Picture 1 (cartoon, rainbow, N blue to C red):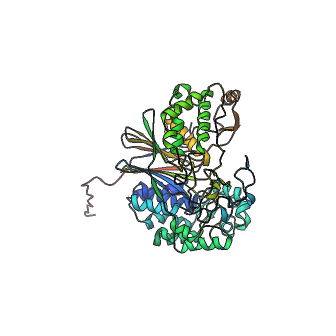
Picture 2 (picture 1 turned 45 degrees about the vertical axis):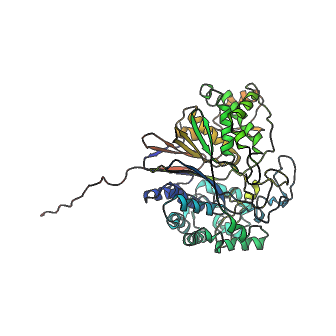
Picture 3 (picture 1 turned 180 degrees about the vertical axis):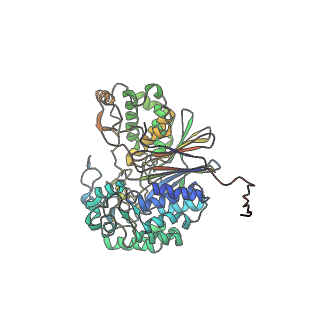
Length: 550
């Protein structure tokens, strides 16, 4: 039994992690726009109604399938400022668990935690190149909600409570989200007038409003006053990169995902290649052997990840080797079914779990799966005065120690686990999916693909099914994993821990041969699928009003 219900439609499908964002995307489709128009409208709306997760000062990755069958990955990830240095933070430890921590948490909270934003320019680039509607049209729902207000969800209220100790120190965030010093309660109306004005300026001037214009000057001025590093030169130089995706075959299906600096395309391929040597359907879902295999391939992936996630402009990434069937065979031969192994692991890393995901498809064969974030909940926990724009804390994704693959360098892109994935059969899309969740993203996406292709689950079942996760030490198990399985895993040497959730709210679309689309969103977030059916009147129909005597 699933907790939510899927939606269907043959004219379009929008799935996001907030009902108003899904409605904004559906509004674009119903107005004659395509999937890209809908996705960008949904993202702008999410910056208003899911402000703890995503913003125009953030970054992310979009995976597009175009009507001609091409796949394009738009990398809009944040970069280190030009004034950033490998030793700009004072680290507190060279070993776990405090390896990434710095004195004063400067890489996590405050102006030194902010990297150069890439989201706005990437969204506008994607819309201009692949969309059909004007920027002002796709911004309209976001502006409407920011200016008129919307009702806070319990999810938003809980997130504010989690961050209140930091947010209360920022007058901009406090005024909106901590009225009277207390977190907004679920159901209370939220109005973001300053942010509505910022969006109106973007509607008039385009991304140049931030990357060279008045909004950019507001960012640069706040950085100068407060000791931050992001400059107007950084903002002007920020630009998305279009990349070729990573492609891999798994049981006759093509699995397509983003390349480095994203982990997902490489490491999902790597894990599936290893799993391909086992009959997972016969092994069964949630069994000791099934979960053991998932845990071991996750550990393998994280063992190799340290050399495969950095910006390829700075680090030589061995994509072909890591995604080869031959390499998978070598790793498979090392695997033991009777006991857990300590794989040759690099340094364990952290990555914020606070992200959002949007999956959209239209009747014209455009599909977009995109993951976006400001990194941590409410990013760096401050807003740019007078604009309502919430800063990212993407500098936390870099290794604060010099001399490492993921160390800070001016202009270097952050690494990410974002996994906007698509699955094809004979060149035809079957599924598009993705989720938030930091380091847990690509492993969760892999499990959803296994659920669909090996275990034969329906889409709603696949996104809601219990997940597991590890990067080498503790094996996290969601409540739905049987206790007998946990006991058997402990006997094999796994150190298990029960957790409420692994990763965030997945959303996905399935495509049927007859053109019907199914959208699904899981219980881990406020996700809502909205499908479009029906259509215009049959050609040639006339309605005649007959009048007569009374």
